[in-house]
Every structure is written in structure tokens, then in C-alpha cells.
Image (cartoon, rainbow, N blue to C red; front, side):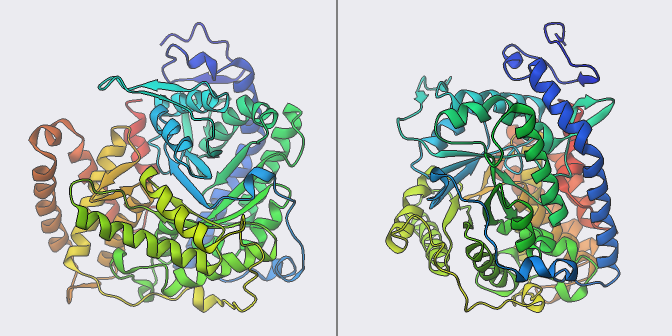
Length: 536
């Protein structure tokens, strides 16, 4: 596999192909740095994941999530996080996407305030995607990234003014099997964070910015404490000044909604606020309340940000962040421009405008979009209603959010159309992910792993609780018929050649298995990684 030109630190093994250019980021010193983080923190990662499973067992037995009595003083006391650097004060529009070379250039050039380069839900974690992503980001930090499209010859390069770069490493539940330390796979988040930080933190600081991150899928303030300890050690080992790292936590799990103050407290020297990770939050709501028959949701399209548990968590997040003098970021607009249908395109853009208007009026300091074409639309809304850099002064003292508010199921219906949409989106996303693409346009929305998780979670929940769908309880036979019919529709939509050349049978099998298993499986991406890892 060509490993001879690589000098590996003691105890480190790499099993992924080492292609030309990979030695730029897989240096001996960088791998030794990642190995130090892995040796230091993997035992705590393992322990915290075990705590998640123990908590899920209690929830399955009937315990309901609640605010923690042992951290009441953190919530009641007055304190604020450390001051933010200048280039994180105005984050009105953030664009997200994977780390392929063309995407990195387009996102940095998009006019957004921030580009969140994603090693997590928008990335299928093949070895090549990850290593090439790190090469691309290192080149971008040094402003030497360029790309020429092979099909058109079009050249891409950075403009003078570019977005501030934030990086999202993988969550604690994911591993990087292609790098082992002392025989153990490295936690994916430590691999992603460690490689990026080692190569770029000093360079970013020299250029007037800094090493900034988004932290996904945490379920406890103890997991935020772990990240803070990683940051302290990373800065200490490299001689980077403490507090240089700034990180925004995605509040995208149900337990995290009850620990927002605690997350900010644990990361107070390194905090850049919280973000409403809406799609993963819906998925987590289903997962954490999997055995609760009172928590069955209506169609995904009816679970909107202005109703039920989502409306409550938005209000609490804004109030919590602004009380601690840090940013409360809004959620994703997943719409993408529809080029061949002006009426449908305008309807989609109107949904984006309404969503962003709701966010800015609620007090959010910025928002997310998935496509460069939406940046000016979101920016216009925030410019009109947020003339200052942020809304930290909007304290929302009028807001009171209770446990019941955070657990309230929105009203709505479950329809055959909603069921079929879940099946189509879930199977097509998994199929694309297995081929190495984690950011997939489907039915005029940019889908990532979170929306596929909702799709299979809803189907599982409806089947498990025999929920009525268009007035008739959903059973296995009906689900099997729907899958058969939707596979035929997918084949018609993508064409025979694409269908036969893809990985649709594996995607179907995995979607059906995860939708029908007696006990809810934690993560689609963990199950799919077994299939992905065999070919990478």
C-alpha cells in the first residue's frame, strides 16, 4: 500500500491507502500528536459512551429527561463565557458542506460570514474523503487552494474576502478505523480535530483568525468537559496560547437541551455559543423516547420549528446563550435552488425567507444555509432586522421553558405520503453515502446523515408503536409493500444504468433492518460504516 515513505510513530498503524500528497498531512509529528490525544482521552470517550447507554436504558424503562439537580448552581449563578475574537462577533450567515476541494472554495467565496467545513454529517468518512479534506483545508488556510474542473476546464480560486473557517469533527460515537494507536481505533473526533489543529492553528492565528470548531451530537456536559480538556492539552502540547480555540456546540440531542448552561460553563474559556441542530434534534427526540408511546411524531414535514418541543428549545437556547454573552445560532435551511421550475423555486425560497425571518425575530445571532444560492437571501433578512453584529443584547427575560415544554409533541398527522418520502429519502441517502458521498440533493433539499436518521427513526417509531398512518395502523406487511413500490419509483427516477451500477440493494437492506429491529439502533452511520470500511 506504499507505506514505506511514511515514518510512523511508535504504536501507530495506518491501514488506509497512502496516496501521493497524503504525506503533507500524515506527517510523523502530526500522527504523534493525534496518538497522544488518543492515548490520553480514548478511555474517557469509552466511559462516556457507556454512560449514554446506561441513560438510554433508564429512559427506555420510563425515566423522563429533566434538568440536572446536581448542576442547579451552574444554571442559577450569573457568569459569562470568555470574550470572543473579533472575527466571530458577526456570524449572520453560515454555510455548511463537505470538505471536497471545489466545495471548500465555493463556500469560502459564497459571501457567507462563516463556512463550517464538515467531517461529520455531510461527509461519508472514507479514508480518501478524510485525508483529502485535511489537505484541502490546509491549503485553504494558507490561501493556496485552487481547483480546475475536469469536465469544463473551469478554474476555481479564492477571492480576496472569504468566510471565516470553522471545522466540525465527527461525534464521540464514531471511530477512525484506518488509524490505530496501540491496536485501538482512534476516536473519529480526535483524528479530525487533531490533524486540523496541528497543521493549522498557528497559521490561522498568524493570519488574524484562529482554530474554530463546531462540536456535534453531545449528550452530556461531561462530554463537553472532555472536549474542553482536549483543547487544553492540544494548546499546551503545541505552545498555542490557551483560550485560542473557540467552539460552538450543536444542541442536537434531547439530553443536551436540558444542559445548555452546563455546556457553556464547561467550555467557558473556549465557547463560541450554541446552535440549533434541528434535524438531529428531531432524530434524537425519537431515539431518546423510543419506548414512549406518547412521543410518536407526525410526518417530518409537520414537525416545524414554531411548534412543540422545537419551539421551546429555540427560546431556551437564545435566552441561555445571551445570558452568558455568547451567540445563539439558528438552524439549517436545506432548500436548494430549483433551476427548471421558477414557480417551485420561488415557493422554496419563500420558505427560506419565512424561516430566517422567524429566527432573526426570535433573537438568533445568525443562521445556516446549505447552498451558496441561499446566502444572499438569508443575509438580506438578517441585515434588515439585525443592523448590529449580533443580538447578544436581546436577553429574552420574558422566556420561561419547563421540562414539559421541551417534551411536548407537536400536533399533526401521519400520512402514507410521509411514510413513502421517508423510505425514498432514507434509501437514496444511504446508497449515496456507501459510495462515498455524504451530502446529497434529493427532491430539492440538501440531505445529510441527520435527515436520513429522521427517515429511518420515524419509520421505526411508527412500526414499533403500531401508529396509525392515514388512519390504519402500520405493520410489517404494509411497510414491505411500500418499500417494494418505492424501490421501483427510485429506479424509474434515477434510471436503470445508475440503479444497477449503484449500491441500492445494500442501502435497502440496511434501511429495512434499522426500521424493523426490535431495539432502536443508535446511529445509522455506525451501522453503515461497517459496509463502508470494507472497501476503503
